[in-house]
Length: 507
Ligand code: 4AD
Ligand code: MG
Image (cartoon, rainbow, N blue to C red; front, side, top):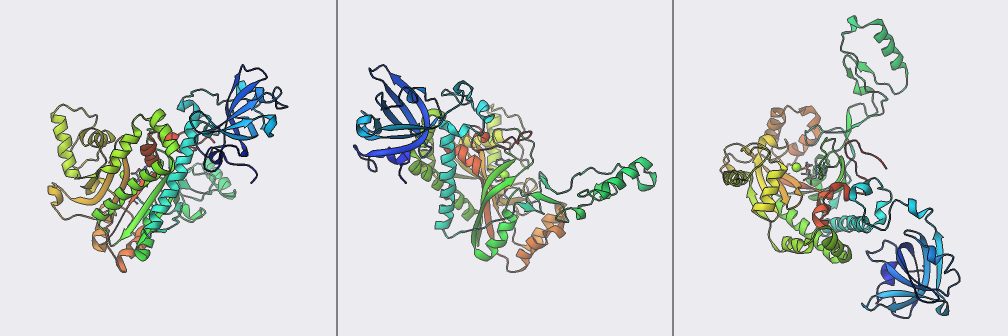
């Protein structure tokens, strides 16, 4: 390559003073000095690192008046100059005729006043409406680099520990969590059920309509009152996956240590700062392991990601610390140094009840057997413990069918519990959900039946327990929640390039 990336041009080791270099990138800002003959300071960045390189352009270059003094934010340029040292000791580019300096404009910004990303502070709300351009800003450039950094760190973490990466399907015929908040996948043009009348009472008009529809291609065949899914592409009702877990368990029960990292989809109508309809999840699954081992893996994993962010993206992390969350670096340092707090759900309920007795106000009631709301989780991790907390052993009625049933009386609980865990962190709340899996076929079957789930659909999942079953455990880390935790960004919509939320799939 005949030009350098800005990150390399800025590095005194790679570009010592006196070297002649060319960089290509976009103008961040331009400032003109009043010096006689003309002198402009043009900050050029190319996204390879947080900082831009400053080009100090002398008025003697031929296109100074015609081009350089007209540069505005995000014009694309190719700049050649000689590396010099700034008073602070960093690299800058001296661009002048004597040393062959050049500024070539590659692309102008037409009508700079109309350019939606002005060199000023825009609100994150405004920038969401400009999602195609917002990555050009400091904040979203840093977010994009962090997503990459953490994605690579995730693969490294598992690869180094002998886990195999499994590509679980996006389209699925099973509802992993049994929560029913799934997006349908269908090639049928219309999913309109028949009017609720029995065939003999159907009006002539309705009958005619139905017959006409059924002649068109991709029209669903209707059985009385509902769509007949056997006429659909997959011949059965299919959905976008909410979790790769059930599929990844198949590989765990043959390869011992596996993980999946992919997009997951949930049609939850929750418009919160922590929920997306499309988000990325990392799901490791370990064989011959219990909940304790699972929680240790989760803690090591989160700490590994923090370390990767701090060591590999110090420039972006400094920006987040200064401009997004004051004290972020201190907070993360504290997380790294402190063992996570482990606490039974039953104990957490006692702590919350004591807090209420002391005057703490919650919107939702606290009662053994009910799910913790985010206000409760945040009280525990932010106010009470002020550190990450791993809550374990939840009441079985609020958790999924596949979680392992604990012995009665575990943790002194007044009812049945399962070996579930949630990792809660300050500022975000739940970041990980996981469990030891029920490996005993009889117990599993009883749970499936008790929960009213269609046991036939789980035939292959049950086979894992029928043929060489092993204790195993795993968890899911929400990638965007991890991004929020590590960057201090407050809204999950601002840590994914193109957020999908209720009533919003623009871009
Ligand atoms: O707790 P969840 O629902 O767990 C599972 O899906 C398990 N099958 C995982 C497993 O054991 N393999 O989701 C896991 C994590 C949550 O803790 C949260 O961080 C994230 O996924 N998450 C979401 N992130 C953004 N938007 C949403 N709507 C999310 N729902 C869950
Ligand atoms: Mg959960």
